[in-house]
Image (tube, rainbow, N blue to C red; front, side, top):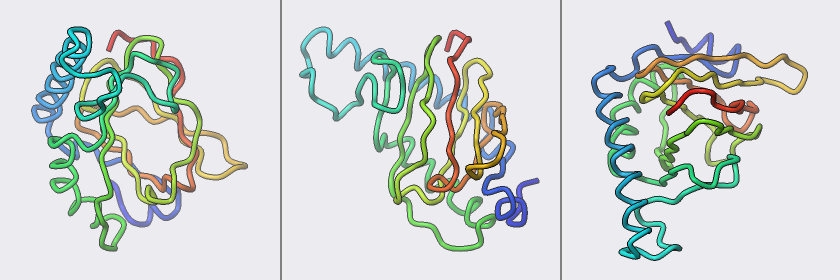
Amino acid sequence: MASKIEFDKQNFTVLKQAISKDLAGFLFMYLCLKSNAVKHMKQQNLIGPYDERFGIFGDTQTNGINLYCCYSDFAMETLLFILKEKIEKIVEHPLIENYSYTRLYEKGSELKPHKDRFECGTSTTLNLGGDSWPIFIRTSDNMQPVSVILNPGDLLLYKGVECEHWREPFQGKI
């Protein structure tokens, strides 16, 4: 079970079933449908190539130009409110929701090693679905990385500005 002691000692912890598998599955399907809809709208010139209101394809932290990414999706912003109390119980201080960011990874995708910017002092990674794929986290410069496997509904809580994290090339389908 995730605890403040574990979080303070390791700079990360895992919340098993932070949300239900059913909710995770619903949100995963929602993101897949939204990605397809945005791709179609861009292909049909219904939205411009630089219109980011519905999401983008690719970002600088990944290797893929086709990965669907979205800042502040309403469903993901709602998740921030749903999960806030659970996370505050672990970190034992009030949190302010800054933003949500979502990526839909595909085969061959990778997340480059990085630390988060200042606004991401307390960060999370939530598995909504798809094939199993580890995220690696290094809690300090001289530590060996830890491989964390999240099942749908599991959440990795970590100190994003202190912990380097990444994902190696994804071998699954989605």
